[in-house]
Amino acid sequence: MATPLTADRLFKALRDEGLTVIEHRSWRTNNRNHKGPWGPMHGVMIHHTVTSGTANSVELCYNGHSALPGPLCHGVIAKDGTVHLVGNGRTNHAGLGDGDVLRAVAAEAKTLPVDNEANTDGNRHFYGFECVNLG
Image 1 (cartoon, helix red, strand yellow):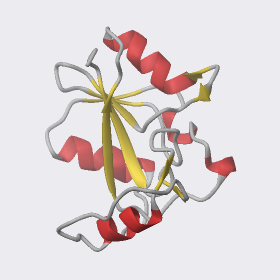
Image 2 (tube, rainbow, N blue to C red):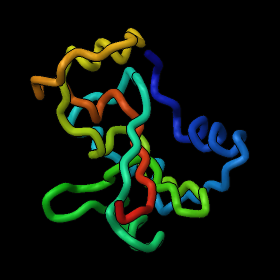
Image 3 (cartoon, rainbow, N blue to C red):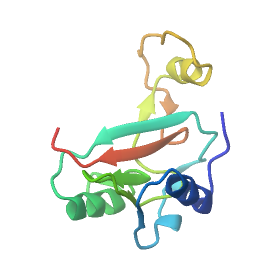
C-alpha cells in the first residue's frame, strides 16, 4: 500500500528508469477525482488500447468517449516504448472489482480468491497504463 505519487514524482520515476516520457496538455490535472478518492495504491493495471496509431490512442485515452469519459489511464505506452502521460489522479481504467481480490493483492497473497463480486472501486487503487495494440 502506498500514497499516490505526485505528478512530478511519477514523471521523474519514469524518466529515471530511462524511459522517454511525453507530457500531454494538462495531464497533471486531467483526472476523475470528483468521483471519489484516489489511493492508497496497490499496483499497476495494464491493458491494450484495441486502437492503431499512437496519436489516435493518446487522444482517446486523454479524452475518453461518449460512454466513458477520460482520462482512461495515466499513461499510454507506444510501440517504441515511449510513455505518453495523459492523466494524474483517478482515471477510468479499472472499474469495479472484487474486494476479496484487492485485499489478496494488497497482502501479496500467492493465490487469489474467486472474483465473484463487483463491489470495490479499482480506479482508486491502481495506476493504469494502455499499450498501443490492436489485441
